Structures are given as structure tokens and as C-alpha cells.
Length: 390
Image (tube, rainbow, N blue to C red; front, side, top):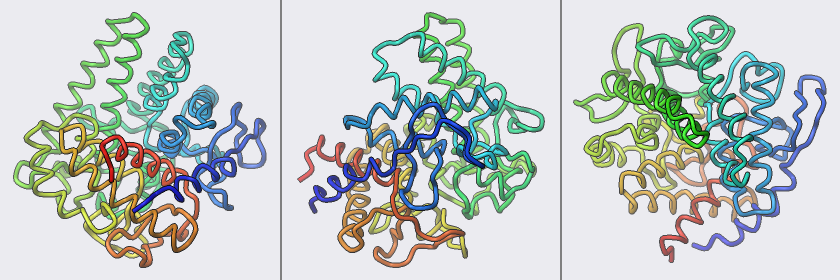
């Protein structure tokens, strides 16, 4: 299948997704730099936390790549102004954050800052502050670090449903709907990566003692995750119910692949996951989010989402499962291209089990666009071309 028409459509779409507003307007928070939103339609007209990182992947090498650093600057501005990077740049989102990809955004943006150490120092210090005050928080309003040095998703309103919104998986079949009682495997994998990113930054800044401190924290986190989240009988990583001191084995999801992306999994664990679990999640159109379907749970069976396809395939590639990674990239690109041929659009999510059938719509239906779908498609096509896609 050829992807040229989809690639051309994505490049034509970027200008319609760029926004600039420097002053607060109603609930919309003003930001100092332009940014890219998920959709050109009426929904999602603000800058989102983890969306911005995945969107940035598709901006590399385009005339719009300056927005990678712009969005890092906007994240820094929000952290400085509010003490937290909110779910998105709306006042009503200040009660929670989102999967914290700030350090990954910094690393991506630094490629275009041409060794600007002062810029890096400001950003890394802010990320360290976010890690300490938000993700290591032990009291309201940032009561996230709750058990054995590991953290949970949270919301100021102390509601499970809103903690699930902080996860970005709103809503799924994970955590038995008791998100506040769980240590999520994806969040703690991200925090591990952040700790290593902070070590990388402080090494570049000539502060080896600080860098080593962050490495030690990462090692401690990895050891605890191995103890609490790896299930030797099932051969998979699960969210951990710290209130009942058990893994939630009844709800396997693609979150269990995050330790491969992060590099926490041991080689033999990665091999077992690929052998025992990858076939369960893989369908015609790519990877299904969870193995359970439930009404109005859009981050669940039968839906596939671009950021999770990317996380899993990056993890597979990291552990040497290149053929599996490229097969999944091809499946995802094919379903996007096929739906584009039928609808003339890319979409927020896809039914990967029965392509061209209705997705589980969740609370707001299907959304045309879509920022991270565009970018993951572009990134996958580049990687497939690099490995000799026919």
C-alpha cells in the first residue's frame, strides 16, 4: 500500500492545527508561543500535555518544527505560572496533569536549540521541580507518591474518574475503576524515563553528582516496579493495587508494554511478553488497547490509539524485535490509509479489530484530525522507509 496521499494530506493539515493566543480568553489560558492542537474542529482547541510530545514527532524535518521548542516553552510557562503542567491549557484542567512527557519534549527540542546550555539548564531545573513537587508529591494537591516510592495518577477533587483522566486513558477497563488505589505501570515507567532524562541533562550541565542522584532514583524505581508489577506466572507487567497489595491481573492492557519502551524490562521478560502477550493484543489494524470491552470505554477493546502503537513499537525495537515492530507499524499505517481513502480524514482512534467498523465512541464520539495520529503515521512511515519498506 502506498502512503503518499496521506503524507501529503498531513503536511497540508498542519497550518490548520496551529494556534496562537498570548492572553487569557475566558477559560483558555494564554501562552507565549504558538502551539499545535489535536484537531481543526470545535473540540480540542487548547494545548495538551502528552499530545504535544506525540504531535512533535511528526513536525521533525518540516517547516513547522520550530513548534517543538515552542511547545516546550509553553509547558515551562505553565509550570512557572501554576506550579503544574495541567491536562491542557484551560483553567478547568488545572485540577490535574497528564502523562508527564516534559523531559522527552525537552530532549526533542534541544536537538533544534544548537547546544544552548542556558536554555537546557532552565528547562531541566523546571522539570526537576515538577518531578519533586508534582509527581513526588505526598500531600494534597499533589498527593501522588503513595507507596514504596511509586506514584499514582491524581486529581485535586480526589475522584477516581478524574484520576483516570490524568492518565490520558479516559476511560478504560484498567484499575477496576479505582484509579486512586493503583500504582499505574505506565506512569511509573514515564517517571523512570524522566529520572534518566534529568540525569542526561545534568550531565550535559556539568553536574555529575546531581545526575547520579537521578540515576539512583531511577534504579530504585525500576527495582520496585520489578517487585510489585512484574508477574512471573503470567509473564506480564500489571498495574499494582497498593491498597490490597496485589497486581490487577484481571485487566491486562498495553500499559504493560511501557517497561519495554522505558528499558525497565529484562531481556527475558521482553521476550516472554512478545511470545505470550503480543499475539493477544495484535489484530488486523494494529494493537488493541485492552483485552476487555465495556460500554463507553474508548481506551479499551476494540480501539487502537496512535500513542500506544508508538510506545509499544519503540519498546519492541529497543529489545531487538524489529520485525514485530515494523509489522505493527505497517498495520497501523494501512488502517489509517484505508480509512483516509474512505473518509478523506485521519481520526483520533480506530477499531483495529474490525477495520471500517464503528469504534467504541466513549463520551464524545469520534474526532477528525488528528494531531497524534498524523505524527505517528509520519514517524512510522519514516522508520519503515529506513528499513526498506517495499
